[in-house]
Image (cartoon, rainbow over all chains, first blue to last red; front, side):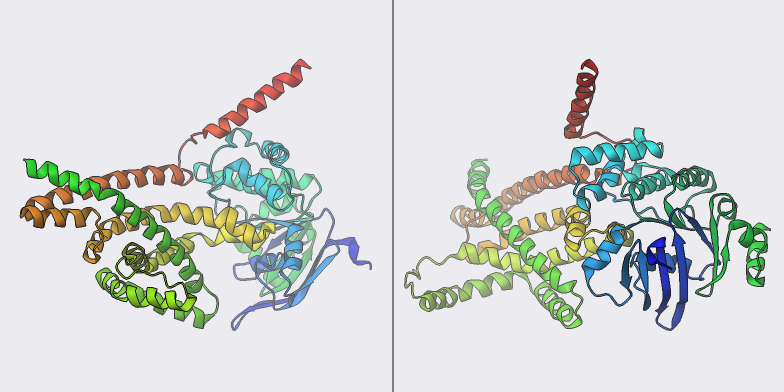
Length: 250
Length: 256
């Protein structure tokens, strides 16, 4: 099978923090346009796996391929890691918007700094992106002046505007109160329809069921189950998955 | 009454020296503090330990000792340099006391500046670094565009404190013959034999300068820290102008 068929390949990734083995050989291949939702109990290594993809956490073994660009876990060259990171974009649990930049400047920042776009052009593009997430009227607000849901939508716009090969969501709604979750999920849903490859770590089962084209269940640092949302959520094969879903649905 | 006005005049004639002394030593202390902070924040443990020890050493010594030590060493240092480079122009009757006082004050405040920088660094949330990394910033882009601007804002209140402390500490340099505010006041006090009056006048003028700087720093703090305060954004004038231009462009295009 030619490698380029997959947008993202995680090959044999191991990661341990001290004696704590978090990832024990994770293999995931994601096709272009797939929306992958990763489920699993706390401590199953979902977030760590996501962070290993863009080297925020350095895996101990294995390799990551985005598009046709492969970087092994032992890579020392910072430039190669940076190139890999530039092919991905991440939406964080705690939003992590640049505090000293307004909403529109947050979205512009990557375009200006990484893509070397001129400021006027970048501002226009950023405003379009903010319009897409419905926050154009808040463009001159600083993150501290926005609600959590609004901040997260700016975070999504910031990630989206970079036109990454793969968009990574690290529990995008976990820090939000229930009322604000809806607007963010709606925003992610809209993004999903554009056909961008996405990988979402979340606890929102209902969201996974409707938006995901593929669901992965992780436990103990390995992929336990992998299939469409129907297969994994409605008809789980392994006992552990059943147990987990039963507890969440209850 | 006359004694107060004359004394005031004397003290005010020392203000430029006090201010320039403070300013230069703050600048120098900041430069040294930045250098020290590189060492203290280093990844290599021996380097870190070495610079931490230097910091604690500098911090533990009274400013007056620095001033006296430098003052005592002026002739040998300057003479030595003079001989080493072969200028033979050093005039022992005119020692550069001012420069050495600046160095003494700067050295005693450098570790505080270093602390200010490192603590500001540590208050930047990890997420800010990660957001930069995830976007693919280089180390320099990350520091210059996101981390350092935030650090500066966090450090400003601390910096203001150090600045006014240094302003007050500069009065010690009258002990090494520098005629700044305190020096002038002492001089006049011995001349007129009205010690208490002179000291009170000098104290009041120090207080006045202190208030000016304190308020100035308060304003700076408020303006730069605007983005940390919740509420409705106050548009910067520059940005408003941009909007005008944008609107005008829209009208122009419509007209076409």
